[in-house]
Length: 185
Image (spheres, one colour):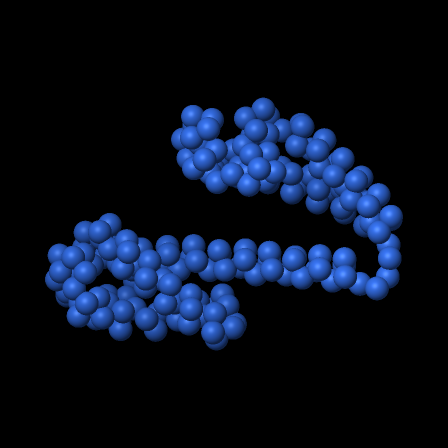
């Protein structure tokens, strides 16, 4: 059941009235904390994410037309930020693993180089088998580090089309690599 915010002047909220924003903040803060805590156990990160949720709410307040719009917008922001948080955590973890691997005292560089080259060859074959537009979007995103907006502009596609191509291509590449991994390991 959706929590019911007491009546507030929505026009004043949209214009940025700090007292009304404070009412919204005080009402929804515990709800957002519980949600984020259910996804993240690090107290400092929970607090930071919740603060960012309300910053994003304030920045996106012009999208709100009634008090019923506040909770769904908050929840959407919270969901997006927690997903982004976990992606960043995974990325940091991968960087640490890579650093540990390359900074270790044992030298397996030749074997690792062969494994890397072989895996890279397999990855290139998987990418080559993607449909042409998916392949192009995937390469521009992963190899050239282009944003979805830049890819959409370059290829003259909508951002949603680029997003869908990237999602499908990534799903295919990960699935193919996963099958190969499970076959050999």
